[in-house]
Length: 594
Image 1 (cartoon, helix red, strand yellow):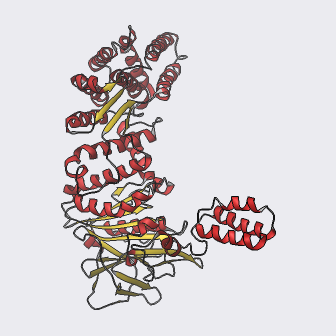
Image 2 (cartoon, helix red, strand yellow; image 1 turned 60 degrees about the vertical axis):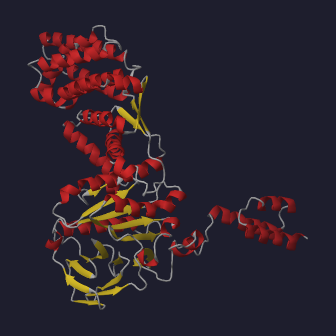
Image 3 (tube, helix red, strand yellow; image 1 turned 90 degrees about the vertical axis):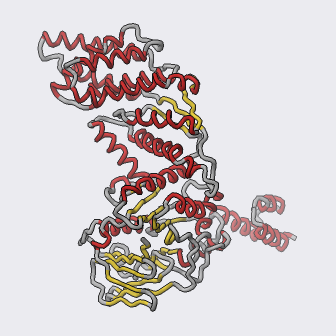
């Protein structure tokens, strides 16, 4: 589905609208309620149209409103998709389908003028009900992304994902107590990446037709995180619960004191094992800690919670009898068996909290030979290949079934932050493609990809390959789809892959934002210096940094005033990289000093 135009009163109070397609120049006259549609001159589609219908770049200075435009577009598309009349704001959206344009609007349009060969119809919002999906990507943390809800089906913005993953974990865990928000975000993202590396390996990762910017991870290191905060929080919370009842009755006071004593013994026993050496023993320690927190801290309040704490502490005595790294797994199994057989433990906890731990321990025992062979003390090193696929997917399944406030497995892929962000994008797009079967109501599958500041964390060499890779990758994994891609960028390298018809400029002028295409500027295949001057509004300031510019100007002033010795000035000139600047300054020295 190729969206080619947007007019929204929030960003177009007196403006003609925002062109969003390479093929058409469209404008809206608000006074006359007139929509004018023309074909772009010299338009040529360089993308593989089997999948990608159009690929557009949006360019503007910081503060020009690129991200805001993305958000407004998402809200308007969501209103169309949900058949929401949306009286909060007015908008017009034009969508192209092989020279047949449909115009959707919740404001009056009295006339539509179009060139020959372009068919224009007024669309009904019901035509678009569930007919397309939108995916949004932004690697910068934004409070707007964090607080926004329901903007699109696939919101992969950093702010939204952090909040959403944390919220989902709390809802699944039924807890309001502190949790590791970033840890839970990392856990879910890592699971998605591992799923991509294994489940797509044959069709995608090893595809020679797609030139990836770097080699995908060949090894995954799995270690156990430091759980000091979680340990202290768990035992302090249980102690606080017990001490809150100490003063009620003398008899009860005796039991509370005995339970506090038992808690202290358990804490001391586990404290001796906080620095286990073996990988599977560290997991057993974390599982004990997780059970104590889930059963005694996170879920309940009042008398029921107090009673459950006492029952769990009674059963935990088995953990205090000569607990060591040699027997921690057997002690944990004994603890679990007694919890499962205790009639006083909530049945929901037995099957929702304890049983998954029991299953996880059984899985570890079944895979002990593999673990022993691939571990180095407290780190498990897994080669990414078909032989380890079953183990890794089994680990993710069992680990994912646990309800954890503080994730304890740490997955490391040996990647830089830039490589990891790129890999996340691969995994996110693959995740969307995997949901194709859920979109049986679509024909074809329509997808709009919005990538905000796509080049963040990328080396210039990667920026050179970004559009080519995205074109090839999307055509590979999105077979049967029709995709529109819109990116915002500050990169002249990225922009050099876009014809002028597919570049939308945003410029602040007289307190009004101007959205326009410029046929005179031809970024496609241009060199970086030209692009900086023409497409990134730097013609007045040049293309070197201000610090260097001021340095060069100050040297010129020093020469004119003869403030320094000739040798000193020549030494200062020597660090300047641009040859023409060095020559001109040396000529100035000759003129004033010789």
